[in-house]
Image 1 (cartoon, one colour):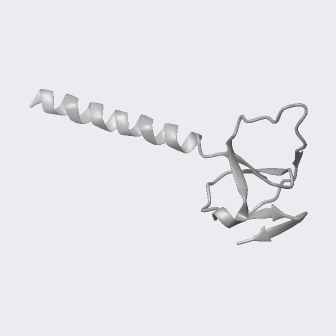
Image 2 (cartoon, rainbow, N blue to C red):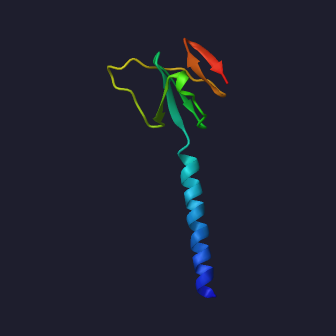
Image 3 (tube, one colour):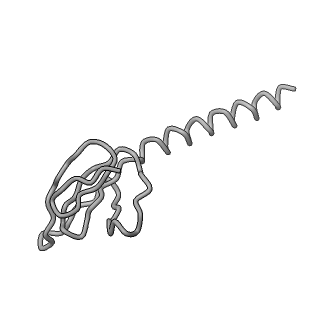
Length: 86
């Protein structure tokens, strides 16, 4: 019986660590083909027609690449200098 308690405790701790690891990695950088980039806290279902690129949160563009930061709250994406909400 004592062994079962240890196994159950190990499983509980393992799932807790996994849950913490998965929530910490949810931030991303999204860029459109115009060079506008912004941070998102949650991953949305960006359709292929939006023509966006998803990068990890620590991504940085190279010195010779033409990007700019354009932050905005909420669900949507930048297209032609305008925030399109969905």
